[in-house]
Length: 240
Image 1: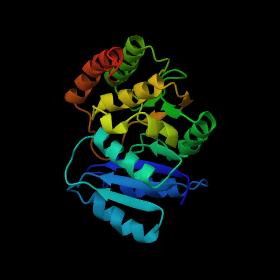
Image 2: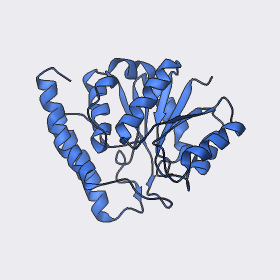
Image 3: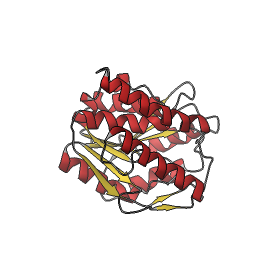
Image 4: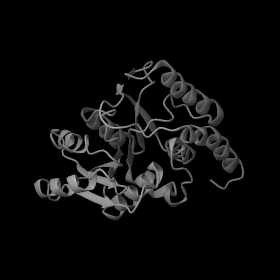
């Protein structure tokens, strides 16, 4: 078993799934992959099953009964990883908005700081490709809002390309994660920050998907806006 695991949640990613799995396995550094699929009607899970014959012992599939949100998919994957004693666990999207070639830098940063490493779009400016200006402003503005409200010195607070050391996931009470959408990424970072683990931002270039359909919605955005207020209140009440 490799010490590093990449968790990729999927829902209707049949156009991307083979390509992203092969791209990770082509890296010189060796990582295992866990696909957490929410019973995609387009057959994503079956494609993964077929690939497991080629990548036996390195490619794993957890098939959930229905679509239940990004946050719960990652928590499911984190628990799976901890039960199997992985030391470093990375989360990334299936649509190539996160470049697999950046994985070694994230794992290396997490290995060095023993905490969290973030693939950051904003630590060296705005490094986003193929997003409309409105989407860039929304994302960048959200990160500024979260940073101001929580006190976290993180430039990309909503990033979804993140690597964790095992000890972080063991100690931030992942069973109590409240949010499932955009706010999930904020809550994970805030819990890590509150526990005083080191957080390193690794600059990346984020490229919007060219295949498949975005899962972003207005509900996810509102969850993030009000979720930050909820996190601060819970921290003040010592219930986080």
